[in-house]
View 1 (cartoon, rainbow over the protein chains, first blue to last red):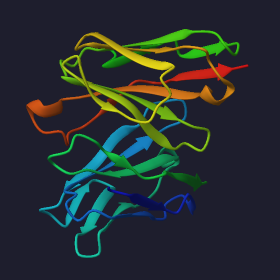
View 2 (tube, each protein chain N blue to C red):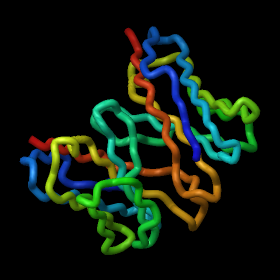
View 3 (spheres, each protein chain N blue to C red):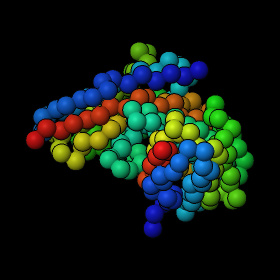
View 4 (tube, rainbow over the protein chains, first blue to last red):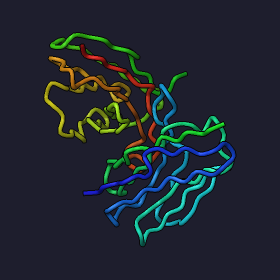
Length: 112
Length: 116
């Protein structure tokens, strides 16, 4: 079955710098890759997703890149701000399946 | 209006008790989920219902029983609570098969269960 690994588990960056979180997946049939952000005391919230027919997607300061050959995808946050501090989860799924396979999460800390 | 609401937000109870967590979604979604998040933040799916039909039933002790009276509600009942059940439990909903399975999930704000 699918397995998703996420690195690093904790990432500390200076405010204004960029942050990159990486995930690898094992099943080449996976074709949907969302990223969720979980703020303290709240449930995860989708911030961006990508499908296997594109290599990159951007939404303001966040972007996701996908390398199908290497089976990895990454979340990029530019010009980080204090409100970016949260736990970020990547996930992967196969279109014919109904289950998201989740990474273990990355705690992002933005230092003022 | 809260899209996915679950109650209670906090639940403190003694070992051996039976407790329930309720979840309701007003998004018109077909699919609802229960997730368990442990102290290391790892998200583990427990159950999923699509139009009141159980479609995902992961390896979860049978002390946990989901109940879906209609597609807008998915409750979780836990019998004989154990210390290891302490965690945050999240309800979520998604469009399900109507569009594709791979669409945005909406999560509730979680129920922090503490078993003493």
